[in-house]
Length: 270
Image 1 (cartoon, rainbow, N blue to C red):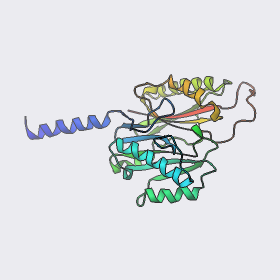
Image 2: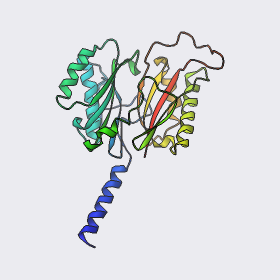
Image 3: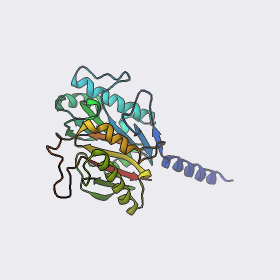
Image 4: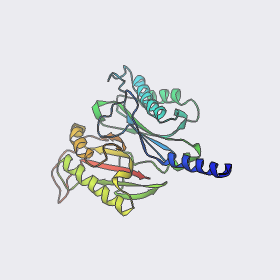
């Protein structure tokens, strides 16, 4: 066997390894639901929304301390995935009103002193476990993928129903507004997403990241229970969950529709 042939085999093997999906569960990171802290696939590392709880479940004493710990939690996932914070190319930042944007900016510059990732910042009414800040991220193994990563971004707080192409995959959004409870809406939403993905040639098993928007964070546990039944327990996607605004004033149906108690956007890739 020639050296050239061996080199080709090694290259093929490395490409195969790069395309293999891997869940990333670093020590000290405890998901608050049926999702993975990180998912590595095809040169990308997707990081679930991270709050400011440390390994002991404690918050920081200041807004800066909370942002800093959320970024430390992201760092733990990124490093467990074999990368560094320099490989982070995009982030979504959700802030409760108790965390001034200026405080977040100070910690952001401290964490990313040069070549900071592209970032979007949103106000959030509530987040899981009453955390005051939640940050998700996308990291790349090869910085040449930075531009493609910008097309892997999920809608943050709203999304037009349907699907659009992403780099090497598809992004789909749905909401189950024909049911009056968060459990039934979650089931309808994910069943609808499964149908949308199948039309595009994917399934929920191909989903690597989700963004969930709840009307009322008091129903987080109910959503979790319904959501978890739709994804493989051994390889769930990452997830970010927020309640963007105050709950709907009425949950009575108008015509055939209820208020959107839950909506979900997913990114599916292979």
